[in-house]
Image 1 (cartoon, rainbow, N blue to C red):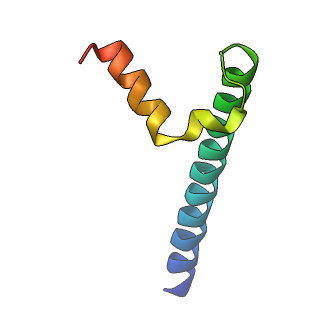
Image 2: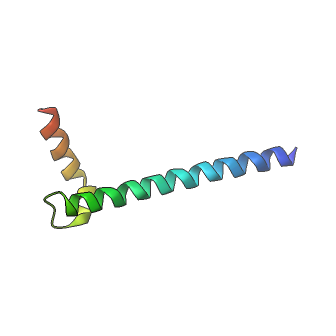
Length: 62
């Protein structure tokens, strides 16, 4: 029975690793895109809550 739990734990760990790497690559891609193609002077400013609120307000029109 322990081999079943080991398999499940391994799969959950792998899923967590993939999710963390996906979030990391998304953040890196946003920072590169914002600093190269966007109007940002600081690449890390795209990760701020205020910038996302501004973008949502701009595109949603609210």
